Length: 61
Image 1 (cartoon, rainbow, N blue to C red):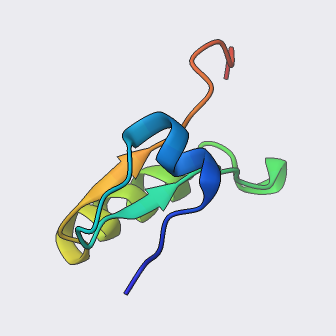
Image 2 (cartoon, rainbow, N blue to C red):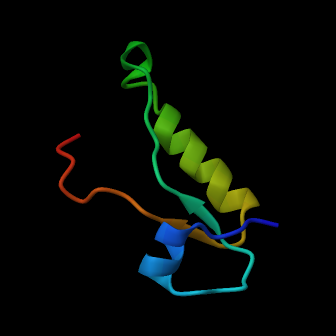
Image 3 (tube, rainbow, N blue to C red):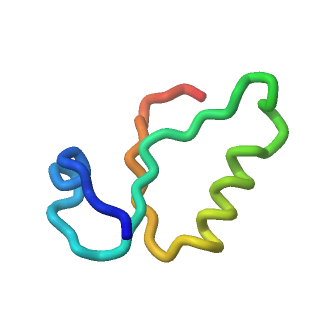
């Protein structure tokens, strides 16, 4: 079962649900434009009940 780190607790509060946390997702530049990131997120959607995103909103890419 996933566990929260201190950062998760500071953002989401202390929770005991079965959520997973996605903090970073990067694709090697050699694989850009191949929908790798999208395929990963689709797999997560289909296989993980609860996902919380901790992403940088100001990232231009």
